Length: 242
Ligand SMILES: [Fe+2]
Image (cartoon, rainbow, N blue to C red; front, side, top):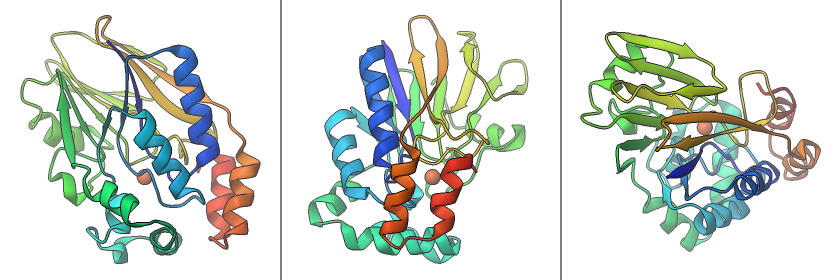
């Protein structure tokens, strides 16, 4: 099976369209979404519609949770908090019910999908080093790969004889005897210094993961953020991938 694994669209419709077009041209069997569909950007409704239409499996992210009132937005920075409050006003009951229906984690074949970490998924911890990865590897059971988002930075870890940070990646040929945690980066707000949208292609027959970087109309996405009166910083950062 060939999968596209996407995460952290963050209401960036222009980025989402570019990624879904690339996925369509590439041709996959299923599209899996790791949450944070909304927050930060100016097109929450359009992004929710796209995800509902195109994705086969979807888990919830911390920004989605905050919009429906399940995660305390007081822990968010000021820009994120303002965007969460603005987003909640743009959505109708169908949208909110949809986000409320999304699980914190889900499994498919030998995969686990979650937004942040397998260690207390609703606490939204980050997997940034081998120590963080260890607490999720412990909870993977027989699953061979866990896909995550949340940090907006593509990063991979391997558990073989010991836990190793593979680092940023463009392609990974997975050892079928090992376990992997793979952060697929962010569609709508990359933070690795590259403005291009990120997502991963996973071929479960070949045991291969490829990171894709896709250009999109960042100027339009920025203009929409400013037109809606959202914080300027949110428009600035997508140009620099920060
Ligand atoms: Fe996010």
